[in-house]
Length: 72
Image (cartoon, rainbow, N blue to C red; front, side, top):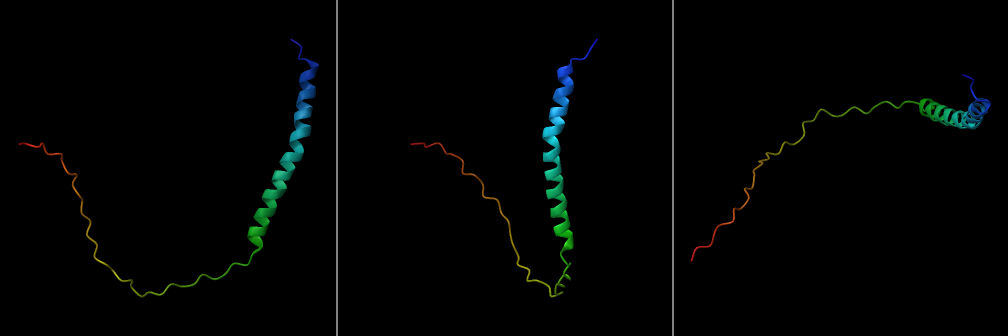
């Protein structure tokens, strides 16, 4: 079985069209990674150990009202 010649041309065309796109995506991703790494890291602020106010909360369920039959 012989492969058609057109198939080889299609593969080269796909590579030719996708190579610049892949290169651009790689460059943009790498530059964003580099920009994110180049910023100096700031020291984190320490949180004070003062206890926060604790409020007492009570959760209740409101029952659904059942339809009562009217009796006359």
